[in-house]
Image (spheres, rainbow over the protein chains, first blue to last red):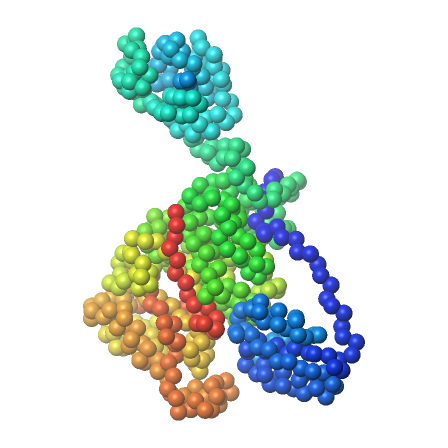
Length: 90
Length: 471
């Protein structure tokens, strides 16, 4: 039986994640708030812990949690940070 | 140079009737005779037996006999059936016979039941670009499960024949890309929608509705990506307005929100299968729903416009009642609302408001939108009192202004709630434009339905989208 493929037929190329940072002292860590309640509370605490260990932190915020981050925001994070932490929710 | 093609079949009485004049045509023109059912008819002329019907299909023959006149290789005119005056005028020949003046033709074999799609799959298969997958020694219903195409229920195997038949339901080209489907951001063609409509069990005439529904959910303001990914209950609901809903036999009456109507059942399902198969959105993958709702299999109905005293939702949105539209809404399941005692609009509005007040959570405001589906027996109460839909909506929104002290955290012994600073505020349950009223349902039963929406509405989440259906 011959059938037509109902899927997108996409074959995304697998990508390896970047290597983990060996040392966070002096590294720039982005902190992304997705705009859900209390994301800031979580990130405030994470930021404090990172700063204590010598990391430089930069805060970012998605306009709304319901949509993917805009390209410009992703590019800004990628261009200015060594790593990023995302606070998912509630 | 003039060339004549004559398409006939021996089993057609009109074709056998005109056999004597075929030779006379051949004396004047270069005549090609194509016969659909035998190589022996007509007896005295060379015949091309069109056993596969490819020639007849490519010539788009609907009736035999059909006479086609080509000048310098280009079709100049065609005529079908037998009309002596018309044939003589077209060919410039005086026929030497005493044939009757007129006889209608017979149906072409290309139009036997099921034949068009079979021929389309065979001879127009180049219009399809989807990958073809071959399976051997497997149960054809199990393939859909094995391949991960199913929503949990059996799917119809998408053969090329079935897909070509489905595509006959729209005038749009199979390779037209209508948008990018989340979460994989995959381009979606009319052909891919047609394949998934086959899986869902749609009839071809439903396809324009499915296409419009897919286009509607892909509009940015609908926020399909977030709706799929949310832990909330919601999924896309489809409501159809306008003539097409009646033409394809959708149910807006008894059990409109329930099972049993093929169009209602399969249109909503086809939309979900497009999200699953083209977009790659699957439960446990990007679909993170904590509970989901049964409407995520399918949730589609039409508004009862013919018996309503109110303008339809589509008319409210600026479309004419002669236009066919789909409206998509990020919906949870439905909540029944029973009121068998109210006989005046004020009392019934208070009942509706009490039900609407608690959607999502009694303390949640400006979160979910809602569709209030008013049944005929409830609508009658407003009809008799001559209340317009806008009056009902205005009264409900008045009744849904809620004091902050009832909404703040801790109120009523419930930790959930709004910040303390809103204690003195008065807040409306719904954002502006968030309450929609439509009419559907069977004639008996003082019951209406509330269809609550995703907790993220408006610009932070999803806005209902209404879109015209193109043929």
